[in-house]
Length: 180
Image (tube, rainbow, N blue to C red; front, side, top):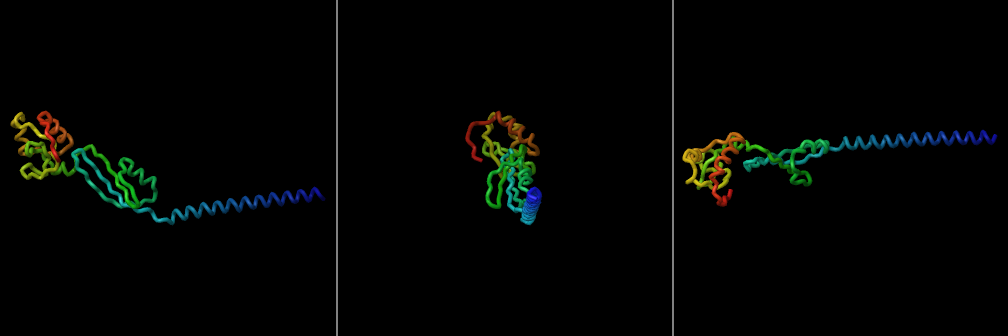
């Protein structure tokens, strides 16, 4: 009878252990399900994002957007090409350097000369709306057709145009400080 008693106690202990394991697994599953539901109930994070594109001509375009973020990993992947400049509660500012001239200069930019300084104008140089100044040019050494080109304005349509003009007039550069 003693053997049966031990066997019966052993079986009861095993059944109680199995029951406890099952209850523990169920409570763990229930906790995980509750966490998933909590995450799903949370509203996506909304932040203001400022995107600054800096072009080789010095122009900076700024775009402001509001992003709704449901996955931070996806958000950071979306802006991995950008440099983070500022981050605070509800706001992030990024900057990207663009190896091209700005759409603004492509549309309105003309190289010209003002007070002996190679300059980019908004429109033809007679309007005198300066976008950017570069360096003094020795006008006495400048070939007459190059001076005439600058006086009437050289349209900037591509990065190549921009770089070609800077390169062409660089040999006539005089070393005087220019303030943009």
